[in-house]
Image (tube, rainbow, N blue to C red; front, top):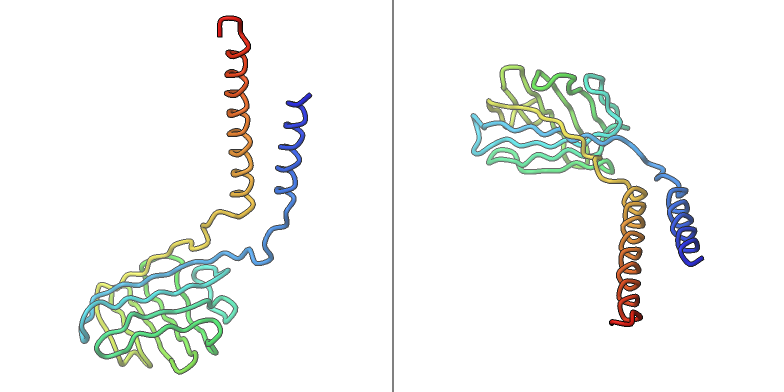
Length: 183
């Protein structure tokens, strides 16, 4: 009877966790990163763009924008533009990487263009006048590949149940040994 109650409890707990609603914003977030060597500035040009629900090769919309960050150089200071600051976001990236892509972002006190060419040429700044270089390469990564809370909770509940069942089995074995006439 005790085993049946335990099984019933574990099943009810797993079903209640599984019935939890999904988060309202289940958007696909993609991180694009560009790296290149400065030709007219010192160091490397590193830019990072986060967009949501973007189809590579399509025109950007304000709704796609999450953030854009540029590491900066001796000619152009580092900056970050977030979705709360952005007022204009145009251009496109993809579908094939690397390639020739352009982007224009305005937000807060920063306005910048970021262009890359198929040969690895890249430039940054208003009308690309600040930094430029070569060996520019875009890469993309799915930034939303984080486990869902529901899956993690369900896995945790299952592991807890297995651990408790194992512990119970171990204690039952000890009790049986102590109850035996030779024990």
